[in-house]
Length: 274
Image (cartoon, rainbow, N blue to C red; front, side, top):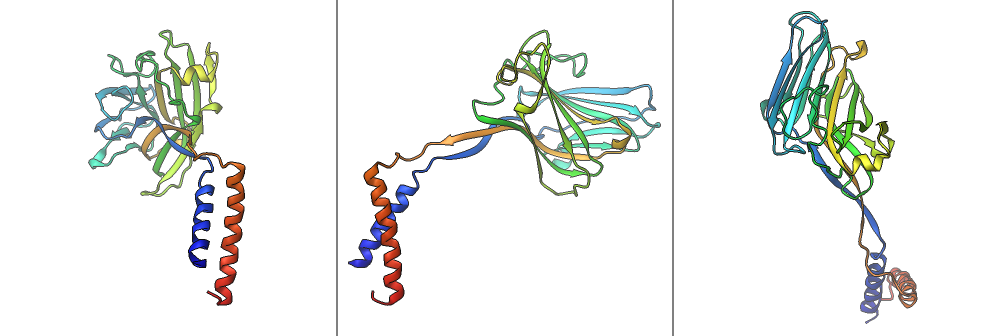
């Protein structure tokens, strides 16, 4: 009987303890998981700047379409700036640059007729998506599984306004020396983005998004020949999990008794009296 009583009170104490509120980090908006195959490259001599653009329907992409754009700013003929999505059945974006300089951009603005991130952005193409999904402390997250040189990845988020004059920008600096097959998670809090144009607040931009441009910038000499593989891009945030009912004062007394009983039971067992 003594054993059963002690175990019962201990169990009650544990149940009360489980009433503590907890928080969890969950996905808000999946921007791209790079499953729909796409490939683009340029290799002509540069300067002048040479570029190519291509749009594809992709169910895993926010807005349903991915605009891919590659640009070469320096390099001899045959030195490629290349981007491939889902090469050899791998769900990732792979950027390959030979001994050249350039950039790779993906634009998420729904379906339009122009995939150039400078001249062809549909600033209301996403229709006003809430990139925070109502979560707390929302942030941007990307996973990198290879990066030899390293460099900046810039994000420009446009508010759902046709003029395109309300936006916010942020940069994630990808380190070099990431070996193939790694899983390096890089993040950027949305609250640390910088307002641009006539945007009034970050909240107005991120809760009403019309378009997004992601640019892997390898135009500087330090990024020459940068190769990188990226697995996904998304926003995430924190949600408070519902807790069990808050213990009443009498329950707190029971909790104290339960803990004392557990301690007493442990002493009885150790003394060999049970």
